[in-house]
Length: 310
View (cartoon, rainbow, N blue to C red):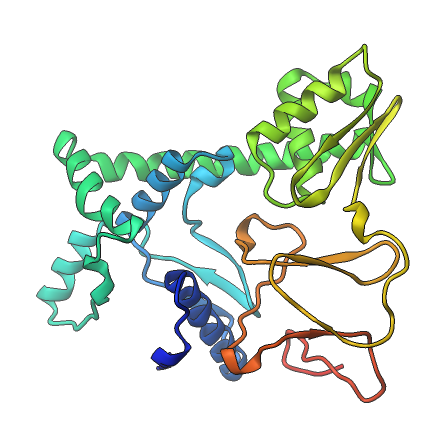
């Protein structure tokens, strides 16, 4: 059991902060006990709510999968074994076997987006079709299979059309149009955060243009897509290029880029690790701020994932 003091609650974004607190506690518990698996009680209704929210919000097809059955987490695996079961069935089982569960008071707060889906949209859809949850779960599995296969194929083709991280335009153009889009999306996601459909559309137009063989396209977070005749490459934010500050300490703020060396930068932001390629989720308690970034100094050490130190 872990308690999150009310004094540490942020003024806004408490749901996201609470999630970070929970998973930070889970990771610490796994490390302390040597556990290889974390099981959470997400159920079929949670999955349906998430899929509907992502459908309404818009984004990439891969995000429409919703909650994944399992993924890597901390020193092991996060597994959600109850996803196939609706909340009503779990509640009936708990009542029949006299099991105790805990209900979050905020679940009734309809100023929270998820709760409006839970109390208004889902019941209305189930009135239209009592098997709605089962159908949505079937779509979830089909989407997971399709996305996994598409990513595997795109990664294989991406290896054939890139050299030293650069996209060879002539090879990429030889792919079928559908493959071009998927491969391009995978290539962009490796370097640039928050890729949206409009960005992919604009990049497709730039790479397929025969009249403008040289172009620069603005991407999220200050990145640039540079098309230079035969190749295309991604340029990091220009304001951060140049000699890094190797001496001293930098106080880190969210939403800012910081140089590591002449070629590498890090971005600190609130993110979704499921959708990030080169991201590490961290949770810092209020007393651990401000967070400072500096280069290695004699006597310094880091804690490794397995529990040791370096």
